[in-house]
Image (cartoon, rainbow, N blue to C red; front, side, top):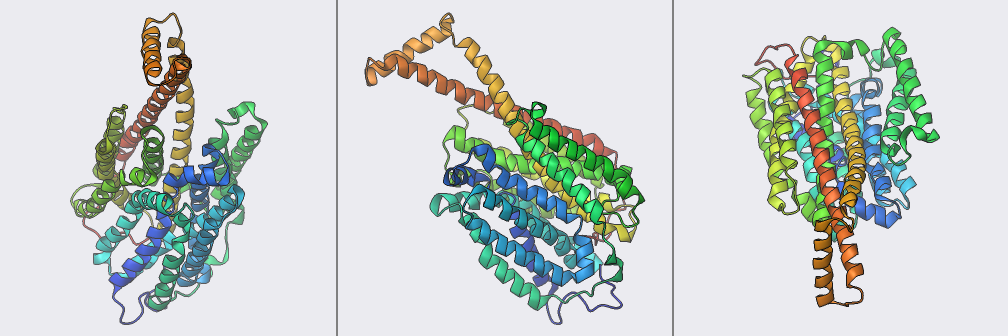
Length: 522
């Protein structure tokens, strides 16, 4: 935060602060959009680069992990180099790396550029929140943060729609190339409209060892979650090695951060009842948001034959609902305790996941769109109140870290949620397929009838000599499709349990004073 008595105002003279709000919200929107814009394009990316679907999912999780790693360090860099300078640097690196992603020639180069993009993007959202807080008087911050919240919540929903349209009509490369002109415009506006905050002496020391330990832990954990199913978990020396690195980094982090005067991660804050509960709830919320945003488009493309555009459109009504709910919850938060709103939001998310377990082969477009809208009712009930709840009781000097940790929790939870859903999907698909295969034996009466009917059909509509082989292949395809649907149902059951687990944590939170100014941390 700037020292108001010694530093110039954040907003340049004669500039309407709402213009600042729109500009920083645009930059944040662009950054958060990239958490999901590639989701519906993964099939195109896999085909274009000659990799498997599992490998292409690293395009999403690499971005999320690098984003979570850097976000805890943003306060230091903003204070050391000045908030405006650091924000422009992050935005510039984000823009350049986005364009490089669009020109990536293989998976390794794409992942390297996504890593850079995530590191740059991780610094943008917290600093944007800080600029926003200093641009408005306390009594108007709630409205400003509601506008900012729309960008953060709606962007992940719009991402698949935009990414699907670009992939179907242009190419997957444009999912990244569009950030070029938007980034340049945002940089020009920020340079012209925002004043610099001078660097502060307090930023002279940085917990580099803590940063490396956290990066090793999160990075290794992501490798384990992403590759565990493929590498046969701990039967693989590769997984054992990364598990050892993650464990050592985690164990070493605890004593180091507890004794450091300016820790990268304040473990005492995480261990507190109020902030610790908020942190875990945000992990769960990030898991629900990102896992559903990735796997619903994937499911409707693979099992229902939707194009990437229509897969994205299935999520679009949810974006409109989320936009309305952000402002509605902004008003509710003045009258209702955050703990009750968060618990209600978690319950609504759990209900929506339960609704999706009603999946079957005959559901239509509106089945997915309707339940996505229900999810979009629940998520804003968590995102806005959790900010007020997490800052309650914290000294002013801790608000920067609180915001950084919540952003890290959202992205880390999203990455864990995507990996958890991937593993549940792969494991349960194999399980259901094996169970269905047990019933597909010549001695089974239902199998005999189905085989005979299919053989007769193919004999009448093709070659009689090949009819039996075609019938056998068709039954195999139906078994694969059924196993896939059952596995997705299991994924939604799992996410429902994650949502339900957040309810008792929310109810543990203390009551806060209602009607106050919006928190001013980032």
